[in-house]
Amino acid sequence: MSIAGLKPFSIATPAAGGSTAQTSSDPGGVGQITGAFANVLEKALQSVDAQEKQVRVLNEQFVTGQISDVHTLVIAAEKAQLGMQLTVQVRNKVIEAYQEIMRTQL
Image (tube, rainbow, N blue to C red; front, side, top):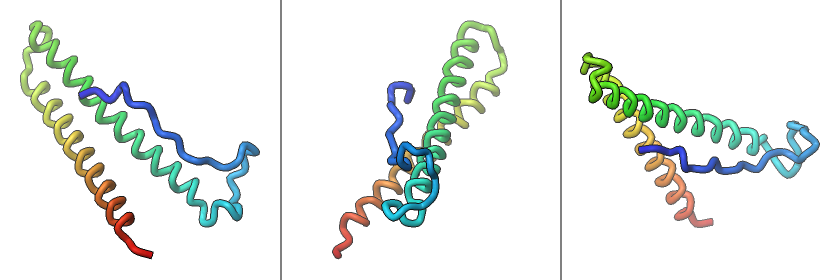
């Protein structure tokens, strides 16, 4: 599964002046924390995508006879599968948290 077609989402950042100081419109540095969280998620998705690409390359090499060590292929495939399962579980938890917040009555 390739995620190459996904576009990164934009996060509200401080004003164009480049100041990262807290302002009255961003109490507690929420924009900075959100940006950092987005960066962590983006790096994690890139890592999962790289693992998937590595498995495809190893699979092609195995099928064409360039490598004969099936263990390398199986280990890479399992790592990619675990990475994808972790990504799906994190996504599910984020959606669950969002839905819980939306159910909260003020």
